[in-house]
Image (cartoon, rainbow, N blue to C red; front, side, top):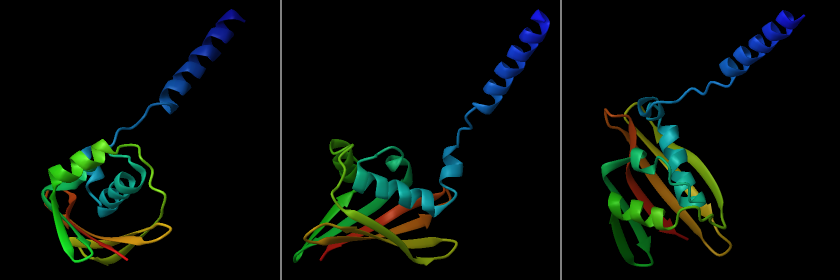
Length: 143
């Protein structure tokens, strides 16, 4: 009886260890699709979840924003610093995402952030850079 209990306990521990094993996803696997990059961007700008943002934004990325008649431009470092300063800040908006155009090299997504008084539309260009899908351009307009 004691052997049966020990055997049952051993099997339970083995099964628990096998089932609970977490598979890690490599950066190459994450960047194999443009959808990981766009979801990471949406999480960063709307929910303050900045994990992996540095990974999905290309080093040459350009961020442009039309505010009234003024065009503002930012680099990757500018955006990363801003999102880190505002980490875990949830925006009071409704976010909708749609793919405008896609092929094997470039995807353009539209991310609308609807606030009470205005809507911010972000046109996000993702490029298959050879090192995976990365954000290379974001153009934002306010309506």
